[in-house]
Amino acid sequence: MASPEVRGTLDVGGTTVSTAWIAPRGSVATLVLAHGAGAGMDHPFMAGFSRAIAEAGVSTLRFNFPYVERGKRSPDPERVLRDTWLAAFDAAVRKAGGRPVLAGGKSLGGRIASMCVADGMAADGLVFLGYPLHPPGKPERIRDQHLYRITVPMLFLQGTKDPFATPALLAKVVRKLGDRATLEPVEGGGHSLKVGGAKADDRETATALAGRAAPFVRRVAGAAKKKAR
Image 1: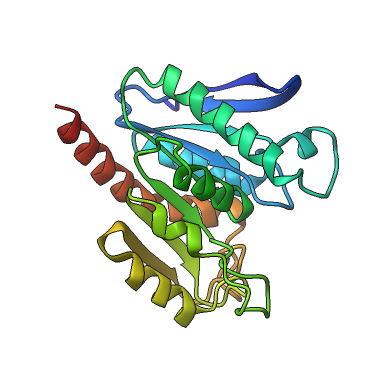
Image 2 (image 1 turned 90 degrees about the vertical axis):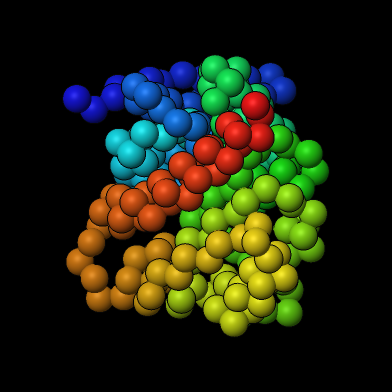
């Protein structure tokens, strides 16, 4: 039987944002997920990924940033995005019962997670669902410097036709990161990670990606448990 999704709220500096938890029995870890710039936590991609990876034994917490709660299109200032991430991560740690907690998300959500981890948020690993390495068509404006300060494992699930991450440039970054980083190309995928011409909807796309992310989460969880002994 599928684990229920439990709705809740989170206080972030006097602002309330929505959360959704899925905690399967026997969970090996918790993955906290943040949405991208253009859609909230209930977008079919986010909901589908969370449900699918939960069925693989990974608990999930996803949440909205404040601007989505207010019905706005423009993302909050970086400080607000970071504060929201930190609050959500702390909530996940409190509920995880000592199990490993990873962070990640779609595009903007994953990038802010990586910035928080680079500055001390104690995630056991990072899962990027389309990392925005640079603005579309502007590879010279690369957003990679903070990544080299991250010491935990990172998984990049990235479309090979993503305008936010030139494949050769991302591959170079991953090589520089060394054993900390794993790149899983999605052949023909754009920034949505959909493959051009494919009939799969967002939820189906996310389900397939969860199947590729789950082994990484399990490996990270296993390593974290051994390290804690």
